[in-house]
Image (cartoon, rainbow, N blue to C red; front, side):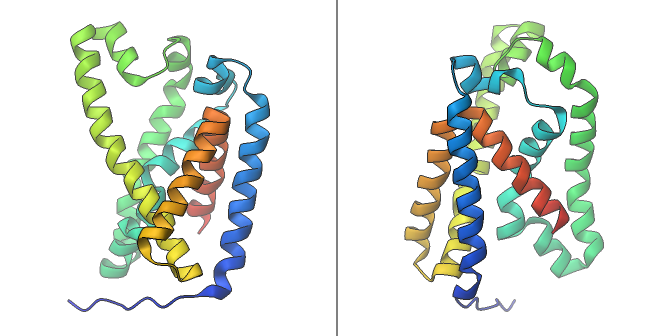
Amino acid sequence: MEFLHVQSAPHLLIYVAAYMIIMLGIGAWASKKVKSSDDYALAGRSLGPFVLMGTLLATSVGSGTVTGGGNSLAYEYGWWGGVQWAIPYVVFCIIYLCCYKQIRKSNCYTVPQILQQKYGAETRILGSFINLLGMAGIISSQYKGFGYVLNITMGVDNKTATLIATVIIVLLSVTGGLFSVAWTDAISAFMIWVG
C-alpha cells in the first residue's frame, strides 16, 4: 500500500488561526458564564438539544474525520463508505434528541451516575471503567488530530504540534467548563458535517 506524502501548507494557516481565535473567544465568553460547579460541569443545564448533540457528535467523530475515519473510508471505498461510517452517529443523535429531557431530569453529572440510579453501584463502576477506556482513546485522537492540522499548516514537528493542540484544548476545557466545550464542539461538529 502506498502512502501519500503530506507537504506543509502554510497558506492554510490563516484558516487555522481564525478557527483558533474563534474557539478561544468562545472559551473567554464561556468562562464569564461559569458561576457555580453546576455551571462548570453542566453548563447550568441551559444547553439546548442541538448544542448537546453537536458536542456529542464532535467528541465522537471530530478528530477521526481529520486523521482517518469517514474520510479514509470514502477515499478507499467511495462516498458510500464514508456515509456508512457516519450513520451510527446520526442514529445516536436522533436517539439522544428523543430522550435528552429524561436525561436532564435525572440530575446526574455523568452516564455512570444514571446507570447507578437504574441498576446499582456495581453498574456505575463498570460504566465508569468503560467510559474511561472509550474517552481516553477519543481524547487522545483529538489531540493528535488537531496536532496533525497544526503540523500541516505550521510545519512544526508532530510532537510539538500535538503539545500545542493539547494546551489549547485543555485551556478551553478548564476555563469555561461545559459551556466552552459544548459550544466549541457544536460549532466544530456542524463545520465538519457541512464539510
